[in-house]
Image 1: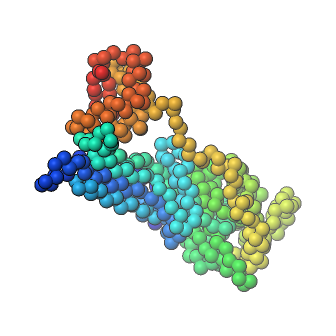
Image 2: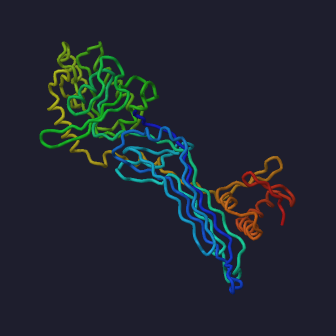
Image 3: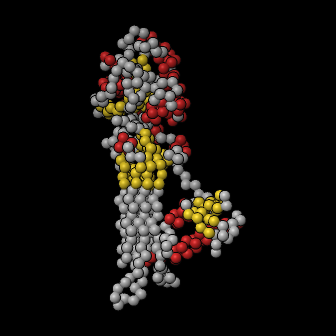
Length: 424
């Protein structure tokens, strides 16, 4: 099964809890704090495996959650870190944040990795809070929560040459003749519903990868038919090889077919529009093909055109050599335009304050990752931990901001799902 797009939720592991403990041994009075730190939660990592050709392994994993770090314990024993989860993806997988649609990573090289969700750090034990002024702290931290996000994985096949064209113009037949690929071939439209890859080996030792991409129809740039799937895969190729039915086997007009494809390409992407292209004039064995070819060359004199008859295996060898020559002139810089990918950078937007405060029906609601993480890591069963939490909020300016906005002592203040009383 070929799957080229899937959406999954990833939840990194929570950090292990720190420990509140004191050394208790005979003849050792006031042994001091010895609570260990918790271990780090597991990361969720994406890793490229060039042996994979589809995202089917992720299709049925709707939620992926890493393990929690091990809690710390007494005698200064720190908890172990949880194991990371490594998800294998094919070359050419682009990772999007499903909420913002911003690109998080573009994975194109074998063994390339990306940490899509980081595990929470382990909470500190009371030993870590011991100072000269406070040698015996009676509190510790809970582990930090792991990152949680919904991602969209999108596969764009990696190929040097993309065979493009209207349905049933002979793309699959050509690929089957020039490589060991076994695409499905039939006389009806849309035989190819998924990209087929084949390795082309030339007599001079050169080789390249060619992809037979699903047939294109009018409106593809707007998602009609197989539109976006087709154009997405075409983005990864170095050369676009237009396969055109020059024999007008089904009454097609070669010029109209070429112009329809160009229109959809130009509407979809400037980058795709600028790719090198050649025309493979197929079905030249049919009556009227030569006349159609003359008209085509007259209108488009600057486009390289190769005459072939795929069904008779005529002209393909010369065509492939010329395409290989063209590939030799294309550098990696031609493939990726840095300016075009500027919008793909994920920025971490930061407010002047690491929190926001709003009044919701008389309740002051405080929101912000830093404060919420601090709240989740605080043991409210320990008095010293509660006092530390209050000091932290005051140090962030929360108390002053509440008063500035009109909060009175005794008002209710909410953080996450918990409500407190605003007081000294």
